[in-house]
Figure (cartoon, helix red, strand yellow):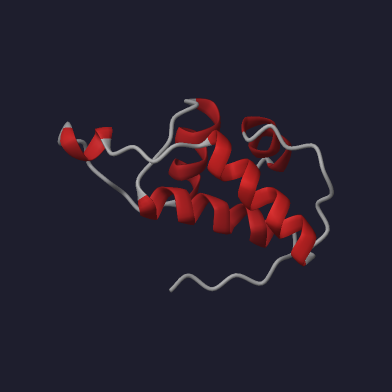
Length: 88
């Protein structure tokens, strides 16, 4: 994952250490920048749960996503930054 591209996409330039404060800032930036959208579902496009595809859609295509995409991409970002993440 290209962390700098993801952070640029969510307009985030704050700390990246795995702390509660950083998590709060990242979460807020993500929610403000990456919208929920289900256009692929409604248009019958194939949905593949793959972190690389989530990352590409959100950062390079500058789109949002549905719950699996948003949570999967954000979890991958957090893991890369050193957070412990469990998807439930």
